[in-house]
Image (cartoon, rainbow, N blue to C red; front, top):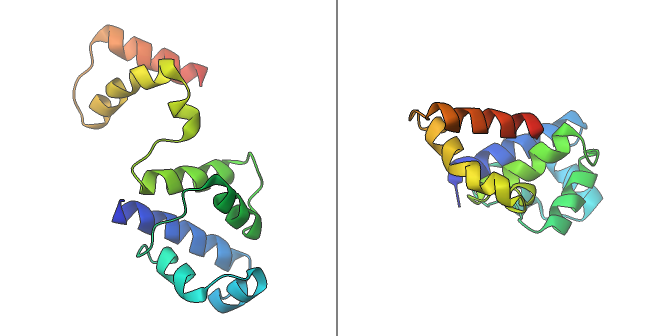
Length: 126
């Protein structure tokens, strides 16, 4: 589990809750949640849930529209906090084969011209 990732997810969750006009206590009372656990999750002390059903439930409470950019960001932050890739990526065998190029690029290592061309083409298709 990434503490930094959990903190980023928690901040996203908290900002969304506040933007809806909810205090922590009121949000928890309205949705039957434990305020202590939610507070720890928002502060990055507890990791976000990983089960899709629970994340969908939370997304519903936060009025995050399914399929929106916020929806994907919410799920991606939860997965990233656990050091995992989103299921859509893991289920794409061709994309998984290209991940080492992405990781090298992120680390600042040079790619060959062909590798860079392949990476750009794959990103454009996404």
